[in-house]
Every structure is written in structure tokens, then in C-alpha cells.
Length: 132
Image: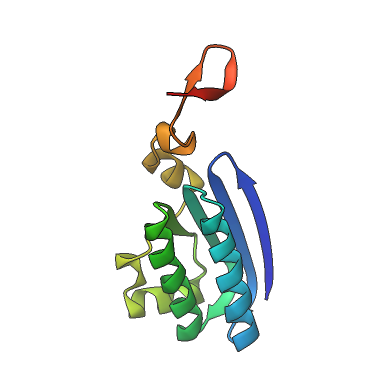
């Protein structure tokens, strides 16, 4: 398994390539997701397009962190799961807890601009905004 993390304003995307089927892989995935959530990112996108397979234990790690994300007022999505991952996600009913999306734009549209700014309002000519 190989993990890649990239971030933007309020977003973190974690891409998974390969198989998630061993204890060390579950731990690495759990750590990457937890770190993204704890950085108070509003949206955590788990890109599963390059993941060939994920075991039920791997899904358990995702659900555990989705629960943690809710405590931090973050949202987590699974982006473009591969056929193998989609089968496991559907069989275990994961979509009830972690929505599956096909485009990043679906995640962006569902997050309010105020959430991305962390309670700040953008001022003309000010990219970062000012506290309200």
C-alpha cells in the first residue's frame, strides 16, 4: 500500500494505492486519516481509485476515523472507489457513515465557505479574511 496526502484550503485528500489488507496498512491508513482530521480540516477526501482491495478491518479503520471526524466537525468522503473497494463498501453499508462521491467537486459543493475559513469572513483584497 502507498499513501499520498495533499491539502488545500480546508481540505485534505489522501490517495490510497495498492491493497489494504495487513495490520501495518490499517495502522498507516488510520494514522493518515486521523492526522488530517486533527489538523481541523473541514473535509477529508479518501481517494480509493487506485486501491485494488480493502479488507473489512481496513473499512473498520475508515469508520473509526469518520466518527472522530464528526467530533471535530469535519466531513469525510470516499472518492471514486475501485470496483473491488466498492464491493466491500456496499456489502458493509459504509455509505451510511461515509458518503461515496465520484468527483472532488461534490465534496466542495457540500462544504460552506464559512466552514473553510474557520469562522473568518473574506474582506475585499484579503485572501485570508478577518475574524468576525
